[in-house]
Length: 225
View 1 (cartoon, rainbow, N blue to C red):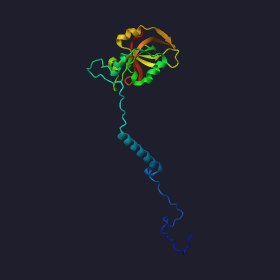
View 2 (view 1 turned 90 degrees about the vertical axis):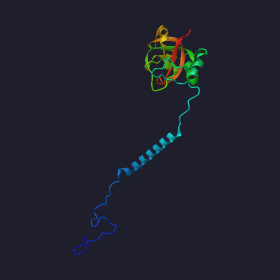
View 3 (view 1 turned 180 degrees about the vertical axis):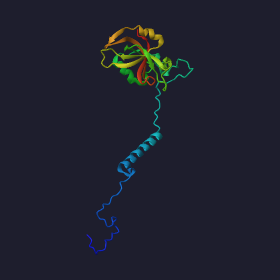
View 4 (view 1 turned 120 degrees about the horizontal axis):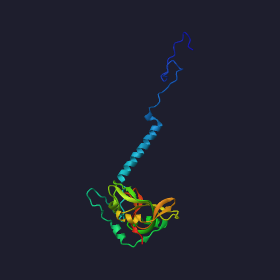
């Protein structure tokens, strides 16, 4: 307390509270863009920008394999049958290979592009053919382009291998219109509580098709003898 005759205390140069020593000095909080989490966000954003710039300048487009089957598309007014691929012509003259069960299916998958166009003999259990959607924003394989009409293609959902094969695979069988009667003449059997047609068929192997939503597919080339 100050005495009545005592002069008021003068504040020191460094004391910004003046004569009122009870007031606490309070500073405004820093703005959001100067807080620690904001600096962390700046660093992450900068790293992403650098990565995008680096990936854009690196040009990582992989060259297309030399033995990959060429793709063709049909435009308006073009003939309905696309020119055959070189690999398809080469494999069409090869003898028909047996590819029964999961072992035969896996062998074709492992052969990769070299198996495209091969005609193999396989046991299939297929549902009724339906009109399957074909992607129009990608290049279609020549057999797919030859069979497609108005963005649709006749195809049957099949199982590759018998019902007693625990590793049987899903397979999409394209059915040409001129072989629809041969397909319809095959017997219908009860396959795991579903009615499917059993075929011992010659199948032109296409592998995973971009135009068919990456489904593993092939073309029905008649019943095996």
